[in-house]
Length: 487
Image (tube, rainbow, N blue to C red; front, side, top):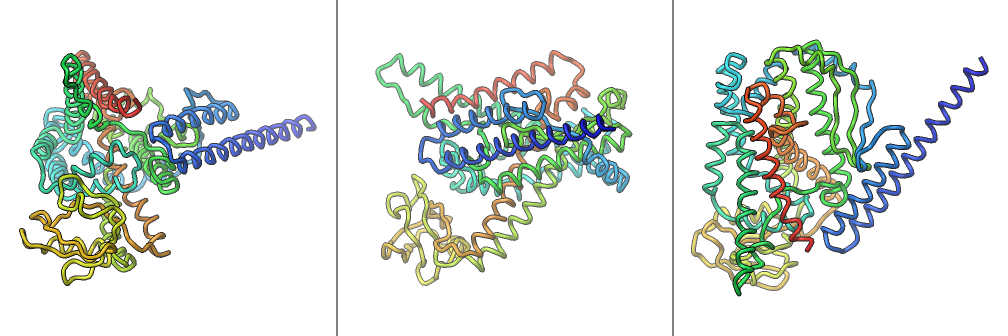
């Protein structure tokens, strides 16, 4: 009995020690990351420093908890949560299966007819294609809101300028067509490839320019990276970012687990994948031998469940985002709009200084950005507008659409505004990041959800591997602009 008691005391002592080390390392990491956030230095240097801090803290936490790590990334898992998955799998099974089929349909569009043949009904495919069109037409344009909560100038400054232009581009129509034909998976592959080829083309032009007497460095400095680190507290808000990532991972992995349990697959463990103190992912570990014995339809449903969950979560937070914009902020954001940035090539550029507060447009008062949007929408093309500002009156002729070419923030930020903005950050980040995680998980890459689905549909390993290689090379090309930024 004494030995058993000693063993329990030793176990409790070890657990307390592990917890103390984990909390201490995490606390130090938060302090260092907070310093990097406040430090006014180059964003690339700060990101690299943050990655180093996270790698070191991840290794220390992993060793303290007796798990292996890979450059600071590690997995912590257990049995908690399995009962919740079992409970969910017993309810609304028909709805869960339809939910997964919806994911397959919007993921692969009309190509589902060939990929899944008799495994997916034509009705489900039609619903998926309609969903694709509705999402691209009504939801996709609002994704630019995510830029307000991402602090990466190399990306946000270029995209903000592009998003200020009026009307959809030819690229958007190509995107719609590809999405209908091959779903969001085909559209994502195309976007990554298109961006990678554009970067390669401009890089080669710069290299050839070095052979002449007129090299053009702008060919490199104007490139936009297609891959960006999202680190809570550094490139996205700390608390809103953490809440968003945790929610994103939970809905994704729990949905995998529920479809696995519906297929009567044993769940071994549930856990999280972390890099330092930042959650990179979550996992539900099913019995892979049992999964391998399932039919292709059941396997595809399990694989796509996380994508379906992220897209549905995206749409849910999209509704909350619009509700906040149109029903909450107009009542608490007053005092005019603060001009934070003017877009080159637009009427405001060089005329309205950054930091200017706009309070009036001709005879209309401007209390917030929603008042500004209303007067812009009612603008008669070609007419002169008088703006009342903190720098006096400014005469200007807007674009034909009424746009001035400015990015704005509330001039007066009340306590109510601060609270609403915190939840708004969660809503917008959840809306945007769930969308991007959903479509990127459809890529035909190992460890991505799309890989197993493609494997079940493409019999030729050479074709599948060639497709994967194309995506990998395209992603690497999208990383290149970070090197020009750091240089």
